[in-house]
Amino acid sequence: MGSLHLSQLTLSHFRSHKRAVVDCDARPVAIYGPNGAGKTNILEAVSLLSPGRGLRRSSAEDMTRRPEALGWKVTGILHSQKQVHELEIWSEAGAARQTRIDGKAAPQTALGRIGRVLWLIPAMDRLWIEGAEGRRRFLDRMTLSFLPDHAEHALSYEKAMRERNRLLKDMVREPSWYAALELRMAEAGTALHAGRLKALEAIEAAQEQAETAFPTATLALQCDMPAAAQDFRDALADNRARDLTAGRTLIGPHRADLYGVYAAKDVPAKDCSTGEQKALLVSLILANARALAADIGAPPLLLLDEVAAHLDATRQAALYDEICALGAQAWMTGTGPEMFTALADRAQVLEVTEEAGASVVKRV
Image (tube, rainbow, N blue to C red):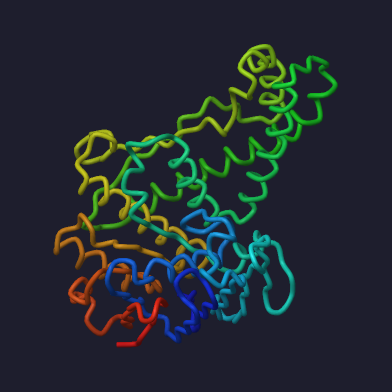
């Protein structure tokens, strides 16, 4: 199987890091240090090497180091299968984020064609009990890992829907104003929905094929969506009267929800214990990674922030064993080195501390 890993990561004026250079090999990267030292900021920097707004969904301005506010830059040397790419992501003094791949300007979506990044962060621990928006984002990140064009379908759909919603709020009733927008929504929306279904199929297959210490989840996409673009276009036209009353579009993939069930217990994920919900999320991330490894020939980069929280010692050890068996470069954080004892020499270890108001990264 091929390899997908970073051999170097450089942060310049990024959040708490004035400058940090991490040289590494393809093994997992275990990062420990006190809360607030800047561990998660390293994972966020890696997440920017993929399409989207990163694991915190922050603005470019929010990621700049204070008080200087000079702008920031993240550079990575990515080994993707048998190719090596230099990736540069930066923002100048609060300006929009920019991307270069191998010295050439590129759209963010291009990052998804050369590297795949998955993450699990503490904010996702409440995924099953909060609103549907977070579950859609979770599903779309999984889908994007398989289908790099998924981001473009999502952007196209959202843009057309925003324009249609503006017409609805202004109480525009002339059908001709809606026709072109609804065509774009129908084409992008059905592609979006089909991609999500394909991703769920791949995830469930990967769960069934694995023997793991983590519980499997039965997943379902709850969305009243026709399979054909023309049918969705007709549905949008038929629904205009209701949408005009509401002032927004009431049908479509933007209303979808991901429903999960703890398969062995036949209990909805939202009703499971905190530890069970965490274990289900870990199971899905690992299944996603296995499915990707089979699909593209290499496991993705994994970003696992405080991953050991709510996992007992047995499942911690099982998680590390699965990551190593996959051959994935997993960037993991914890408050102390004891969190990674079960990894032993299978990982490279970094300590992050704060000195004189800046994060300092040391190889251990």
